[in-house]
Image 1 (cartoon, rainbow, N blue to C red):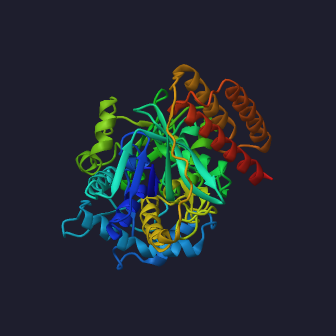
Image 2: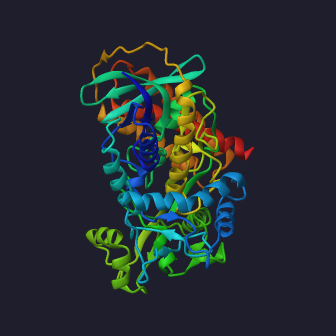
Image 3: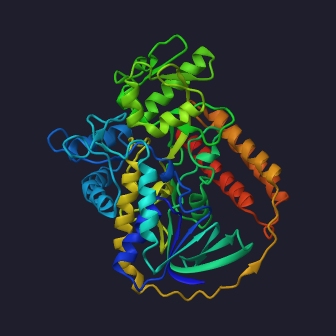
Length: 495
């Protein structure tokens, strides 16, 4: 099957890129693949909002740039940060024009929230379901373009590399149990993150690092994989995967983080307390847990106005109440959980990777924006900005690309499910990564983790049959590859 553009992933990055290209070139054949339903992505779960300077009286581009650089530990690319921050109002305006309804204050202006690491209120939101509302609007808009074909339940296996370029992708059609080859002039990876490599994560089960793993196997440059952000306030439910996220905005609203002695211990690490950046708050929680030998700390919302809280955070309130937690009366057990992959496939200011005709946008890409830690609510913004820029770049080069590769065969395969076996390997990977490649890991631990992962992967591959594929076996291989990228990067960083 041939197309002009193949997009892998249906989060905000993939959807907005597809819309931008389809709007400008109705003659292009655009195919979008997603391994579950179109809304299965980190975007769907994003609660907080979009960071953007919309009030020049209380805010400025300079302040947003400063906050982003500070959160990233000074390791963000200043040129990239400046571009993203200054592009934010335009990209936000487009979403509103598409039909996304953000909350407004009593004067009709956008209601702005406060989150950790921000000097002022600048988070544009749709209560506590911003990502879901954006995903909903983009999912409906994309269906209006006749030149976009959407394939759900298609799991990418590997990129096809030929003459120093990517010419397509091998894909498992889960409904028809076929391996199909999609040939494309441009391939766009918008595959999201890899939080499922850790035991506790806020990422959906589809977040297995597929894009990074596939790009790595064809030699694309991957960087900063040791910079993995943990969200400090995930609702601790030991048997849940993913863990339910308690938005950064809840702390911006005034919630406290306390230990079993009711102490607001974060202030010992940073004068901003609960409103410090995620890496600082998460590290403080981990150190507190180690020192107290406890398994969780608590989010305290009891002092907050419950009526306003429920109006502001209806989704969070409903979920907690469904689990027996009335936040006006009970403390909520929380723990840091793997949340956002700050590194990834190296991509330039236009989303281009180190390999011809391969683009990477969204969480799977390392654009230079985040440095070692992402500023809250900069993720949806980054996806919008780079999807826009990648679309412009695509339209500049696509007519000059000739697709001469001729492999179009479809191979009938036997999908052989081994649920219990695959689940066991996944749990082992997660245990290794969580115990030895998380906060405060020492080099000796990381080296042991690396060796354990290599031995475990070798054991898995001895029984792996490439012609008996399933989405589970594909994901396990990708999890192994991403785990090794992370452990190697941590070891190298520790010197």
